[in-house]
Image (cartoon, rainbow, N blue to C red; front, side, top):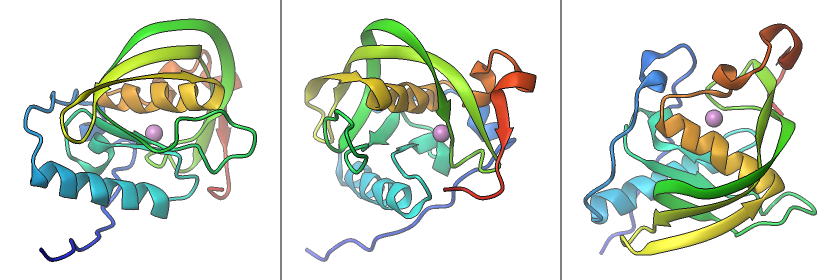
Length: 171
Ligand code: NI
């Protein structure tokens, strides 16, 4: 079997209306899905600050996210998580923290998220899996799941005046 060609996909940018749509549940776990997930991960890693990505950011409106914060220092993590049809089942603690998004390249914002979460999902083979996350990883997962529901961090700011920050360059 030939190795699949890696593809960097185009990231939709705010205010593209597709970012506001709700994504569909994945029902078929096949080679098409596997190829897509490879490209999605490549796209995440090619992007600035690429610790997470959601399929709707590349105009594929299916409930698929990837989160990998393992390259950050002193950050508890589960490695690279491919989460299909993810659902939060437990959460506690609330904390405000700064977020960015490849679909909102010119801004960062302060968003309140749960500090600890437990989620269920399917893996790439359709097997049920469960993860517990805390801190920065929990924040990244919540940010990416929001994308599946048509929400951006911009929709979560308490105050645009106080919690939204222009940035010159994505780092
Ligand atoms: Ni994002």
